[in-house]
Image 1 (cartoon, rainbow, N blue to C red):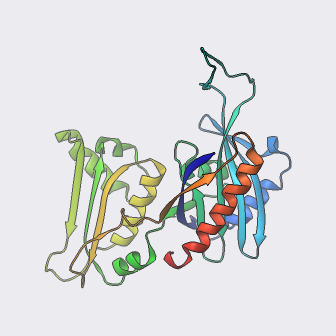
Image 2 (spheres, helix red, strand yellow; image 1 turned 135 degrees about the vertical axis):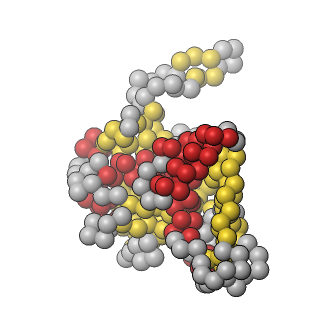
Length: 280
C-alpha cells in the first residue's frame, strides 16, 4: 500500500561534552533486556526503544515506538463501524538511521507520531540522564553561506507568540521579551528583525540563535513561520527555514506487518542518507 513519509536530517550534539555519545546511550538502553525493561513514561506517554543495531562501522539503525492506550480508531464495516477488536496498546513507530562519523541523524518526521523532544525525554529518563541537541539541518551550501561572514541581519516570525512565556533554557530572555510585547498588543503573528545596517560589527550569537529557533520549532515549542539571515558581504537574505533538509518519499508498505514495514522504512532511510550525503 503506497504511503508517503517524510525524512528529516538532524545534527546530534551532547548538551554536556562529558556525557556519553548518542550511539552509546542507545546501545546501553537496548542492552537492558526485553521491551518492558526499555519502556518509560514520558509526560504521560509511554515510549520504548523497539530496535537498535549497528549496520556497519559508524552507522546505526533502530526504531522508537509510542504506545497509544486510549482513543482508538474504529473498525469500518460495510454497514456500520465497531470498536477496534483489541485490548492491547497500539504502536506508532519512528525509524531512524544515525551516521556517527558525521553526527547526523535521519529520522521519520511526524511530530504527531513521536517528536524528537519526547525521544529526548525518554533518553533522559535513564541514568546518567543525558540530554541531546537535535538541530534540523539546513542544506549545507546555504548554511555555509550564512556563516561564512559575520551575521548582519536576522529576521524571524513566530505565530501565537504569547506561548513563549513557557520557553526555558538558552536565549530565554529573547523569547520572554517577545512574549511580553505579544501580551500587550495581542498579535497572532509577530515578526522580529535585527540588523546592524551600515554599522561596523555583527550580531553576536545570531548563528546559535538561528539553530535554537530551528530546534524549538521542530520540537513544537514555537510555531516558526519565517527565518531568514544575511551576512556582512551578502546582498540577499537566505531562507534558512525553507532550506531545512527534508525529503518526502512514497513507500509501498504492507497493510499489517510491522516487521516488514520497519525493514522497508529502514532501507529508505539508508538510501536517503546516501542520496543527501553532500547536503549536510
